[in-house]
Image 1 (cartoon, rainbow, N blue to C red):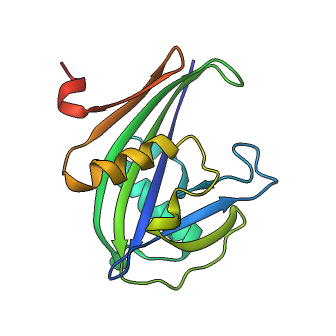
Image 2 (cartoon, rainbow, N blue to C red):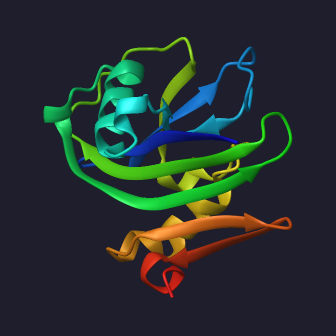
Length: 165
């Protein structure tokens, strides 16, 4: 069984209600032509420190350095068991942060765009759409960490302290 990790972030302009989204390239193997945050696969030495992975990914995909990232916080851990293309388990660590730098690079991953919050969910999203809807309805107003799981096609989001029980 293979275990892999992914670290992703949704970045907000510090003084505006705009978020940075990536529209994945049509040529991407996984989730082509859909919108998501920035991020990617964790390296072997990052599994115990996903925050380092997300900071690296933010820089690699946007050019935003760590000193421009404010209030970086882990909000969701998504655990998925895969049986389709590769049997295994994936862990997706989803962070939210504000940034003081809004000039960004463009990336081979797709097209980066700052999008107003009220227009954010009007897009074709990766499987993180349920997570984003939860964040804007309730997660944004709390410091809670949430765990997202899928079992028999049912997607659940549970506060971490309840998930441990």
